[in-house]
Length: 388
Length: 214
Image 1 (spheres, rainbow over the protein chains, first blue to last red):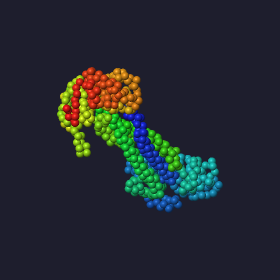
Image 2 (image 1 turned 135 degrees about the vertical axis):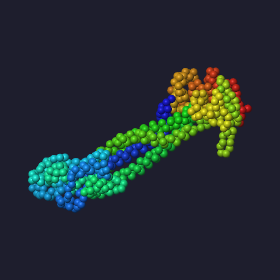
Image 3 (image 1 turned 60 degrees about the vertical axis):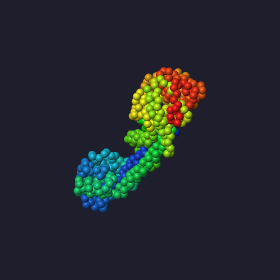
Image 4 (image 1 turned 180 degrees about the vertical axis):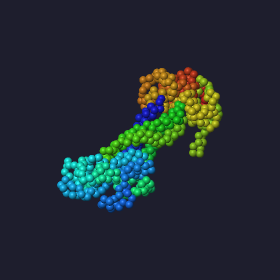
């Protein structure tokens, strides 16, 4: 008789034992999948929040006075192609999401009512993908050519449906479609306008020039900023790196928090489940002593006898991992909606986790049944079979 | 065919030792029907299980076709039991989650073995029980199935340990006549019993007392 059929029949016969073992796998798989999915969602949420807050590293020309940078228009500029050079460097990996920016004060902007205002104009270059790093979702300020995003304070002075008009360095009035009216509370851009970099450079007669690169610093063992500074300095000694530490800290803390919970909860649940499962397999072997004794008497090998237990563990591990994956996704979806405002709808099944799960859990549960399987081979058939 | 040479088996428990078999020696030829009799605790079952390769003796040899079964490796010992020995026990030891047919098929390796199951079921008048489970059967029916399971592979030796111990007289006589049929077809039977009525089917008696042949 095929051992698979034998195992399935036994599994269905001793329903309670099988069900408890199955539940331990489901619990372990569900918690792992939910934690990993929520951790991923947390990363996505952080990314979205960071996008809202801006990037955490600023790269300026060396010697830039930050007070001047925000108040007057005499900061140094540097070539826009620096961004591409950094992105193309194999050794430049401490910084992600490189976005070239030209940011200036525009002293006399006339609103549609004829009033004069001093506004901030910011040109964003498309975020540059780093060739030697894994591709990531862009975080930059995506402004399309010919359009602008208008800050909340300015938007109040521009009627709906109107275009944004501004006089260029050439004295000509330029017109841009308002693609987005930004919400209040975005910082300096509340009183400014975001352009496509090329458009702003043309407007101001500063083709090919930028005065800032915004980026995201990595979480590095020897400190975020130190690594980034060394790497930038090695390529462009005329640039320096400044960190907006509250943003960087928020990002890092959120990542560490999820990793900390995950690194405690997942092993705890898996080990507890494995222990319960191991005890259930032990109970199963004890309940099957007669049957195991008979198997020995009819000449079944120790390998056959232990494989009956291991195969049962494999089947339950496989079924439990599949059920646990979908249960974990439901849990992550349910709690994710409560926890993550921005990315709740983006919580999707992580199919690579499913792939790992259907391999790891059957193997782990076979390991938990290993000692009971060995004990099964040690059953004294003569003692069992001669009982009256 | 079967030489039991100076077999000794001692059990030790809590600092005390108990000699179950003490220098037991006898021969069984093909076609012999031997009843092993003696009082409880005399070592009958131990001797039967030792011949079946389930209890390793301290000393002595069990030679089957001139080969010591305890010199075989694990695989060889499994093969010896699978191909040459059939067991019938007082408790039937049917697998509770397998049907009658599946319980018998459990021992079959070759397709030819499986093909004989139906004819044996018919011979033992239990064909209608084919798809029933052990919990649905009477003790007599269970023992008939255990008997078919023991002989379906056509072993040389049938080791029967008190096969009628739990049966009423009618079922006892059915089982004993089935064992007799196996013997008539050339099988070797070693039957443990303390019931003289059952032992009368045997052509030869071996009496054990305190682990010794008397």
